[in-house]
Image 1: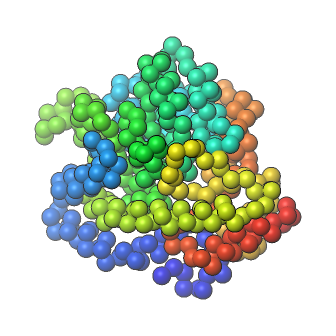
Image 2 (image 1 turned 60 degrees about the vertical axis):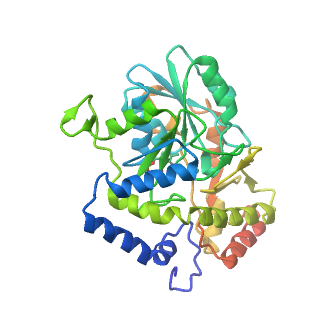
Image 3 (image 1 turned 180 degrees about the vertical axis):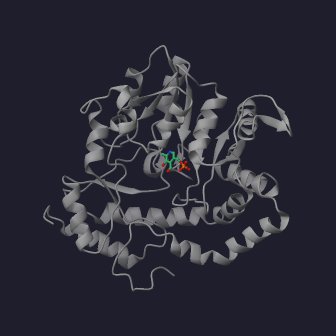
Length: 375
Ligand SMILES: Cc1ncc(COP(=O)(O)O)c(C=O)c1O
């Protein structure tokens, strides 16, 4: 059960209901790991890796320590490093770009499409130089980016294409699950994701035997057999407890995705207010909604208005990556990537999680429809 205080307040996100419902199953799964002391690698990691690979329809899935590390290891296994450029969206969680920076490579930021808010292939193409080695598309908020267009660019310019699937566990694009459509699909299982661990976890899907093997070696101190280190590696393994928790939760992922989809369907169909603009949907996509983001003319006043109605909203993300202080040295200026900057200034995330009740959805919809621009 969520929130004993009869909940006049609607949270933006709440994990306690899911945890309570699965408490016994998760506790039993953790207990099994403790009894076997299988904390790194071993049967629980393998079971989850196989289960998630089946879920995706992927040839390989290597579990690692986080979504950030999944991106880092995939780029690393592709040989990306110092002096290389990797094109990433400006409107993403900054971890997408940080994975590039950690390798000594340079993230080059592309603008998004004004309607779908996904990375714009024309903006990507205009940023390709002789140093470009890869592109990372982010399936933003649970919708897909235009994979076919980016695949065409990848082929034309001889670049790697990676999918950042941190926000899209189960999204289907043209009949295939995202994460299986490019050279590597990188997943985060951060607790708030549609499939979230009870701590940090991530993984990489791929169809390439050699790439998968390299990622497995890199995640484990550069070794495939104990104390023989073929190359400089890292400690970025998926731990057994997180894998066991994820195997339990994976059984519910499709149900939770359907519940999230129902909420978003209601928001999109029943919120009718010219001040509130929804994300455009890409054709041939079945989203696995992670966030229900809308654009409003004045975010601060909208959030204050919703707050007064007892409805908490989120904001993903208020500062685009190219204008983050961490990237000041790259020299981007305000106005350079106008669509991403518009989104950063106007986006608001409405409450979305599987356990949101019909009454709570009704309240969100009613409040949105009554919004006039005044607090
Ligand atoms: C788009 C995107 N990429 C990467 C990450 C990083 O994942 P993690 O937090 O598991 O390192 C996140 C997570 O929040 C994300 O939303």
